[in-house]
Image 1 (cartoon, rainbow, N blue to C red):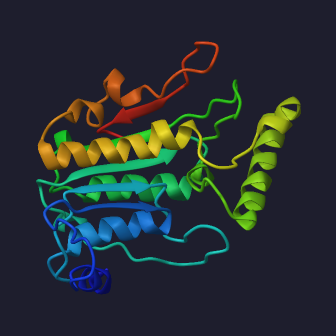
Image 2: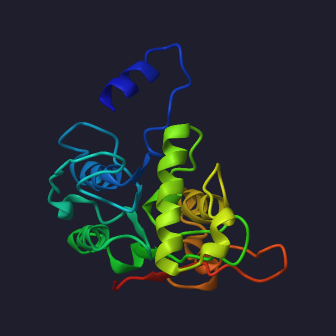
Length: 228
């Protein structure tokens, strides 16, 4: 990250605004994002004002076998806006890591952080399955094959074989547009401007709503709490 900043400030690029620095991380990146938010000063990085940890995992994602340490997250500054998000289909290890991140970031007031749980909704097309794979939105065949395998496992578990042809994760869907993308954009807007905090903090309708299916029925959306 320091090397990236050095290059960007090298004179031949548009220079980033160091006062508007946000971090989003997925799986092992979710743990790393929290660690950076707690240690930015030590590593001489800009202070993150917005942090989103998606499906945080110490082990990592596809074929990973990591064992990441978690820093002392009390180092996350009180003025940081902090979101931790999981899916209802995530395994217990991810759920436990997510709660650990949320509670050990105890310098951040409850009013400035939120714990999000995405809910599956397989009524429409494409069906939305709320697990850590939902974030991949794959464009590469190896990721697509991995996610389709995960979806078949989900189908068998739910005994919903009639839905098999709809369980896909090819490209970007509502779980991205109305889920992680929306949350991070709203989090950054609130962190930079102090406006629209209700769109990402608290448990109001503007946080939980993820849109409608084409027949007008609302998606299951998400849950939000400061006491996971």
